[in-house]
Amino acid sequence: MRSAKQFVLPGLCLLAIHAAMFAQSGGTGPWVGTWTTSEVGRPQTPPPAVPALPPFQSNQCPAVPPAPPTFMHFNNQTLRQVVHTSIGGPRVRVVLSNAYGTAPLTIGAAHVALRDKDSSIQAGSGRPLTFSGRTTVTIPPRALMYSDPVNLAVPQMADLAIDLYLPGNTDSPAPITMHNGAFQTNYVSETGNHAGMAKLPVVASMQNWFIINRVEVQAPGSTGGIVTFGDSITDGTRSTPDTNNRWPDQLVKRMLSQAAPLRMGVMNAGIAGNRVLTDAAFNVGINALARFEHNALAQPGVTHIIVMEGINDIGNARTNPSPTAEDIIAAYKQLIDQAHSKGLKIYGATLTPFYGAANYTEVGETKRQAVNQWIRTSKAFDAAIDFDAATRDPKDPKNFLAAYDSCDHLHPNDAGYKAMADAIDLRLFGK
Image (cartoon, rainbow, N blue to C red; front, side, top):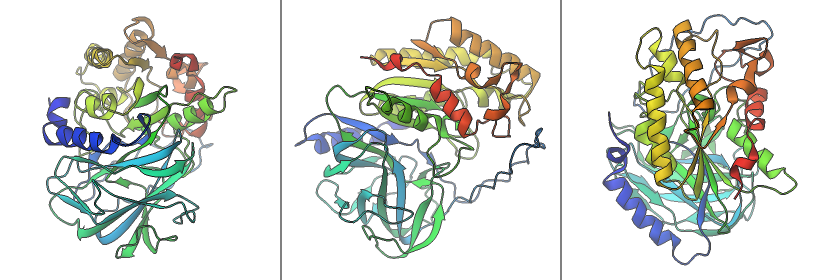
């Protein structure tokens, strides 16, 4: 099994440290992540067809339209990608990633602005991005690249539009780093460099993020950060696209709506299909132990981590004895030790119901109950967050409450994601 250290060293870590030092100079206040996504490697061909789920058990569930296909290649085009901030700040920088690349990746131009609507940006809000003072940059394989900071008043809970002009042709054997499930409409231009244009000349849209890894803002020294680390349920699968109804987004809304707003960067490190102990098939993310350092511990300003992961290990094992509940628990202990070694608080979230899902078995349910019981009672995590209790049907605890079920019996709907966020005790993030 690959370790996190093998994943980020040597090139990624060394270049990221150097770039961070360069971009930090001349500023005031620490950098805190206001948005992030966890990278995976884009395959060169579409993934194999997934067997259809069994018929839904409820006729109350609306049909869910299929997700748009992953956009596979770009050639001398500009991407305009939309990200939703948690906290705001007076200065911003953008981190780009070629973490899964096996060849250099050239960015011909980059730009950040406040999004107006759809593919347009707010007049006067745009700033070109430079990298070590240069308007173009080539990112080495497996490296991160930090932009130079720009003065831009970034509001909390706002949409930023990040433009990247790709002068080359990504139709090559080298994978391009991406995130599959954005649940956010992003845009691809016609041929040419259109970075910073008020309205992008759009030829296609997609619900994926490419190359962008993180957005950071400068914040007061007391500002902390929360990393939500998990699988598709943290990623927001089956939430309504373009509405920011993932449970981490709902947590931001709740924190900022308090009489005394709780301003902390919230960084979503969920990957659909991710597992604790094994790599998922077809390039949808290395295992949680391997990516924990890069996707969680290394996030700027992180003070707290919420871990909700393991249902894919259980479901994909079907009736296999391995991994056992004890195997998953042993992996949790590794994550806890790593977080504590950095002086961070780490909270364990119970696994939500999956009765009726395509990968449900009674053996798996027994494992889920054992894992949840350990999270609740062991006190190994600094606290337990009971997402299971928040979303299950009290009359039939193996099931989602019908009002929270997205109808695949595995992922919550928007109301279910809100119930999860509402179940988190905000006192856990007190100073």
